[in-house]
Length: 617
Image 1 (cartoon, rainbow, N blue to C red):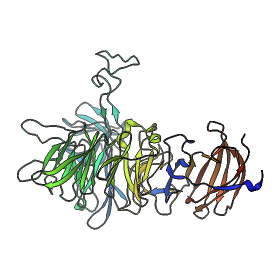
Image 2 (cartoon, rainbow, N blue to C red):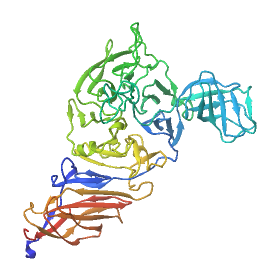
Image 3 (cartoon, rainbow, N blue to C red):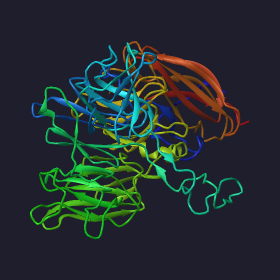
Image 4 (cartoon, rainbow, N blue to C red):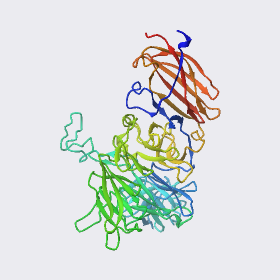
């Protein structure tokens, strides 16, 4: 072999991750990675995160919204399975609505042996963990101040329950003369979707064992229905907030009613519904999957019904000649999943189809057009509008609507849906990172009940990547930087950590709450010389850009055949001062892996590899 046979080959790969085939078949492409994106065709690591505030969130956030009031003060609203929160000046306020108020005169019993108070209330049904706000109640049991928020610890019969207090009472007593009120807050709901089981729950002929036979008096092991996880819809009414928990009525929060956000109040005239939106130009509030207007022929819950309020009045839902409220039933599908605003229309998805809704004025108010079939939405928050184009995740594909509905070519579809927890699909959450022109979907992998992974589509470069924002945690919601200077997320960094709001990708921050973050990217296998003969590689000439002081590790893997044993050289540490890496390896195919655990940024340039023939054995 002569040294003159050596040559430099440029390591240049197709942008984005490509996982629709084997690592060998995806030659010339990037194959795997985590916490990386592609910008102008080149991979770089994603920036980090830090806490927005130190206030802990209760429950699992299912929806967040950011907006400003008339004085341009920024706000965040968060709906969880336990609470409705409002954030002002980085302070978290509990805005969970009050659903009923009961007088508590003469209804307390205290004990010296336990830190609980027994409450007797006629015909009031509560459950363990429900929260009650006690107001204007005198001291009971000699030393107990029960005022404030108390959680129900146990229930005894239909009219007795216990709430926790800080200490035991000084004396056993029954306080018959105490006055005050109990404000029952909106009860907590399940954080997970649960399959209905038991008697009457199964589909026809559902089996209870491998044999598949089920007698008439046996409970079904497979549910014909699912109890869906708690979900919220949030939108603004001018500077104020409208909120709706799935299956409930609207709630209204007047931001200017006090110096700090108070509790939302129920809009009692509104229908129960799956979700809602405010139509921006005509100012109707529109409920989807809503309860029908009661007529002489009846009415009730209709998961395919669209119902809207009078124009400029979210308290008026009764159709009349003097107002513009009304309702329409959509045709294709079994239930409405979600809706988003787009350019000059609202886009609606059922579990099977897509519709557009446009304001046309009286007498019809809105027109509805079906624009797609077999393209249903996978979850209530799995669709997003970007620059007038709608993008969404379906049951096993990604779709877009730009005037026509089309399946998006996706280079990681099998990777995602092959490792996906379909029982918690309702939790998929779509967001935008306008800084990088990206659409992100947060989703639960097969072994997680909460969104622990992401997939990102770059709208401009049409590339796909995936990974985990938190290595061992979850991220449940994602909001663009249109109000704050960076994207806003909610999540927890591990299974045992508390839930917080996070500033995601602050400028020049590459750490996770001050700790180094790990990123990696790996290519598919590529032939060193079209696989005709073995080649000898002895030098890597790196080309990276780094934040000052940062490094990256590079490894070269080689094989003689696709199914033969892999040989690994490295990792070799590369810094901004590294001119070359000397090494020795042989093979017909090779792949490159980059990995880094650092506090700064790195970006791939144009690496080259020195190779020469090494025989054809």
